[in-house]
Length: 359
Image 1 (cartoon, rainbow, N blue to C red):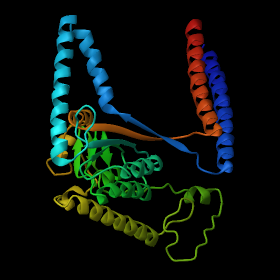
Image 2 (cartoon, rainbow, N blue to C red):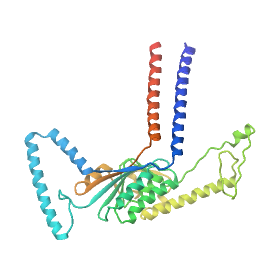
Image 3 (cartoon, rainbow, N blue to C red):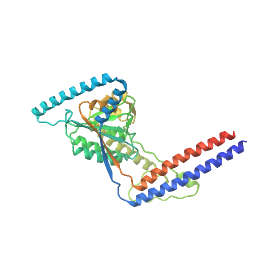
Image 4 (cartoon, rainbow, N blue to C red):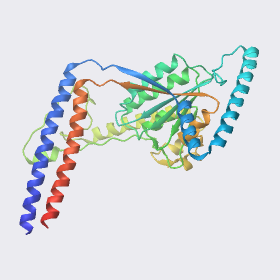
């Protein structure tokens, strides 16, 4: 019985493995074709006024809980309030010669961006377009809010992402960073640029440190009498390698480079958060939001939803997204991945059903 069971599982997983390998080959070919095609795919801007969305949500719940009489009364009160606001706005316009929205709101605008960071900070390609767009319109009395989520990643990639945020500061436009889940390492490098940093109580903040690791297979190569040649020009062109025999001098230089990067990281954070005790927080540790406020890594405890809905009461709030247009190769790759995941789920479910029916 046990041998039969093992044989069934072996056959089942062999089918799954064959299917996965086939799909990987197809996806690899698609990606290669896409890269050979060259040229960056064009994108488009999507701008939504969040005030309208919040109003629709409010109307939906109101119609669900209020009776007809209460709804009529609310509608009447709302019209009177809007009329009064319009009168007040006209008076203000006559005094200050300032423009107002049709509903009487001030001309202050809030622009909301999202940055969801991975190891390579891939979102920076869309992020730079969004920031460029906002800077064509934003004024010093406006505000930019960035909903930031990132555990960090490559130094140069997050350096570029941080530089994009610095453009907003350089334009003297108030910048608020909202962290609902995590802004650590490179994520905090970005967050520290904000005039204000807001975080949820259990958001992970900090990790002001630098880390690098790599495996070394030199002993394995020696075991099988495989020689590895690494030729360089320049004493420190390579310090540690995966296949060569690493030296103490190479390790020392590698650590020296890490320390230098860490010093740059600390200086960068200290520039934008001068009140920080940088020596106390630049240990690579992380803190939850409720603790991070104590060491001044953040300025207040708040979720992005709470902050943005508050702004919408007296400002026009716009969500700005730059959506990359996928070419046919990328669409095919996404479709192939979805098909693979669906087929794997079906194969596993079928295999488990078959086994359960026999046993």
